[in-house]
Image (cartoon, rainbow, N blue to C red; front, side, top):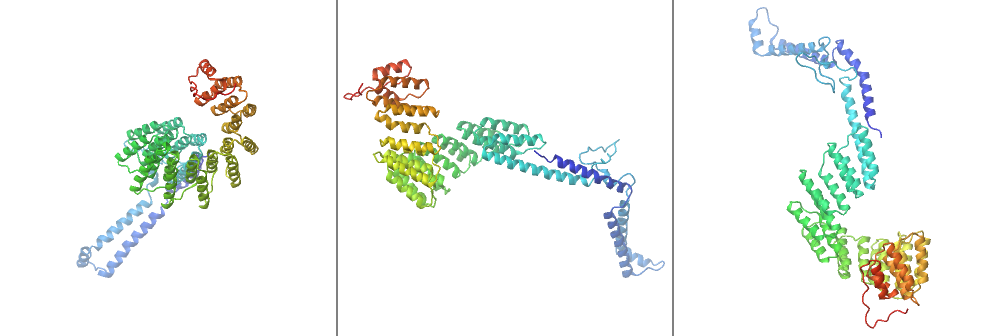
Length: 578
């Protein structure tokens, strides 16, 4: 990394070349042009005054005391005398004493003053002329500022992309080259660390910042709090805000909003609300960001009443309600399964002049899907397209999920149709979209269509995830086709996909429904799953009891140290065939 030290050296060389000529002229007693001009002007002024006096009074005769009396009383003699004195002083300054050039009396820049009793002035250094040195220093300062600006731009780019290692290298190289990084540089370094949620690295650079004597600002602490918030530590956020106050800095609206957001991300609505109250007690007026974070906290919990309470409070304070504000309210309604309120607030959003985005519509479509209302989901998709908003992968996943929840023999066909629409729209169709379509086929009992979609997924270059494999195996499991399920298991193992409780359930279900029942295979499958530390939940235990029988299931659970127990059999329930 180049640093303006090279430019400083170049400036010193230029100074050394100019300075000797200046010193020679002064030592030779050559008059300064500016002093010569001053002398000539003052001498001319004295002559002019005498000329005016001669016109006003005439020339005096010999022994004419009256003329001299009038001349002196008029003050004209004083003017001529003063002008003559000034002209004489300028004349003497034109030729300073030999060996004492006027500019040599002040020490050169950077030299220590040596004047005083028993000391004489230090002579100017031959490499630092009186006029060349300031120009060189000014150029060096400009170069340093340019280098610092370049560094800050590079650090900002690294922070934006989260390239912590690059940001560290840039700052270290700058300081090794002799540069002095400022508050902005270190704050950008902290921002890069915060982007990666690396709280430890943030603390390390804050210590370096303090050790370097760089000023720590409110922005510095806010960045530290942001890192803690992104790392999911609301308590650490509160601790840094307290440290900011102990440092003598006053938290601002961003400081409090960051703590509120940290609690909101965790769904801690009460904690977020408590910090809003503290913000008001500190006489800091909350902004839209603080309220949006609080509404988001309630939306995470699906608390529609709490979200609407703070939306109304925003309106009372005449704060701007944005897309984020309304989308959080819509999300609360969707999580609560309140389709009617979600639709109403989407309409209210439009009437308020806030344009919904793809996320807003996708949330409402998701609410319809959760309510198994495919018709309403398709309706809102059409309204979104009419407003010129292009659906994304999440939108199509929600609609296909609505197809799966509707249930019925035609659901698999509907899901595949929407998958084709997504592909035709050119959206980034990912494994989640394909998995939803396969799941819809499974719930419709259309195993063959699901297998065909799975094949299309692999041919498109997408790697199936565990959810895709579980969705593919489920319809075959309901049929009791354990051979097909084992083939799918082998394929999944070859793709190095680790099993989970959902796929384990499908395996055990296939052995339980098979005719005849495959108890030994089910037991071996369960033992393998326990060795792989797969979660054993109530659903897995229930289907295991169906596959091996309840008594043997209890024995297995006791042998393997699993605390779950199968639910008691319902009286009159037909036991699976052996």
